[in-house]
Image (tube, rainbow, N blue to C red; front, side, top):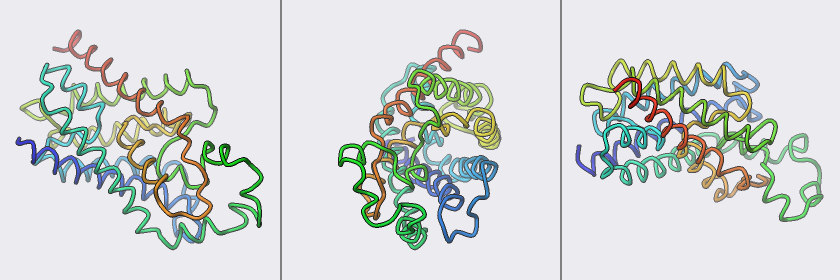
Length: 262
């Protein structure tokens, strides 16, 4: 795989991942969406199908890592680091593109949701907090773009992301890789998608299961940049956890693989 193939494949694949994954979150969350209040099962399966579609689309070009934690784990497993920056750059760009496309697809619903007084309060409601507090707190649609904890305990939140990512990456390394070991194979895509559904159902409750630094950081940046009325803050105080946690989890999974399976 050339560097250009890797970058293009990861950009396209991660954009599809976030478009469909963020799209199901928007469908369940936003007023005037036909799927509003469809619930956690819809979100978990929506993300699983998003992974399946994204992997099948991008695997011929880049091997469909679509996740910096997966890229890190494969680099640790093989001891080959040269393509890691290219993978990570494509993943972050793709995540941002996918998040922007969710906004385009649900443009009217975003406006209706964020101008509804039941959602954002009446005139002056946004002024009840200081500017600093509004920018720090998670806004009413941030969950469409990125993750956040139900109970804010940094150590627990970090541990939850690490544990979920270890499960994901171990499944990728042991069951998901193609014959070359550089990316996901045809059957591996299905296995990985089902593992993502399982993680969402079993471990997603505390933090929303980012288990992918690009999946969280890219859309969070887009949330901060988009001209959404009454959007609230992007919760940057929490943003390091869904980046650092999955990277630690990916490294641990690679270590386990090298000790137990290699």
